[in-house]
Image 1: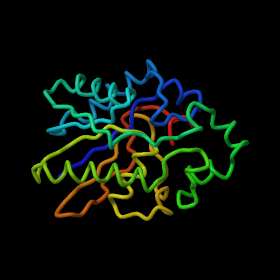
Image 2: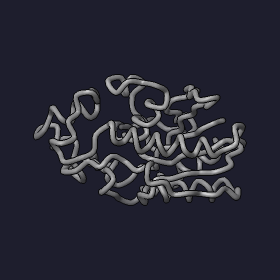
Image 3: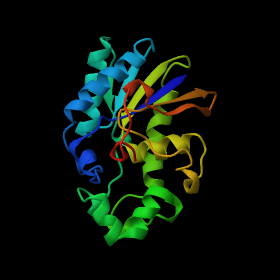
Image 4: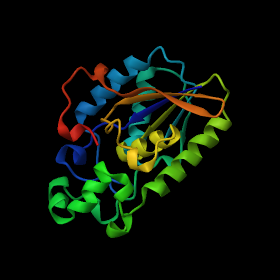
Length: 216
């Protein structure tokens, strides 16, 4: 089974360097619509049978635009388990401001997940995100034909946690491959209970130099 994971297109808050979790949202940038069309060209020969998306609008819109651009009749199902982290009091605040106010929390969230204490920001832990997302994915995989190809559209931090956990990575090492960029593609294979990484954070098809605000 082939599994493709897409991070949503870049949004206004992404551009402004603001934290955007499960309770925060902002519109996709006009350039993101173009980026999604480039992703569709990358996926045009991939036989996707079903797509699943986070219910949060930035991800759902990305999924809807992508399917439209693919020009195929691909069913889309909303899955709550694919939502972004609940970032509590960090929602809508700028990276640079929080790096000054709560440097230990920000450092842990972005670079040292095993040290992250979600209670400090009244948010959601890595363990919680991994459980809900992996439960959802494993359930979908169990109900899908073994030779199928499926697509998931979700969010940067949640995708890093869920994919690495599927691959068997410990929480302390979730960041070992780096983050994921807006409108990026990550590909893993599933066979007989085992997930294997094929490609992490593919972005070459976007034909542009990535900025610091593109990746988390």
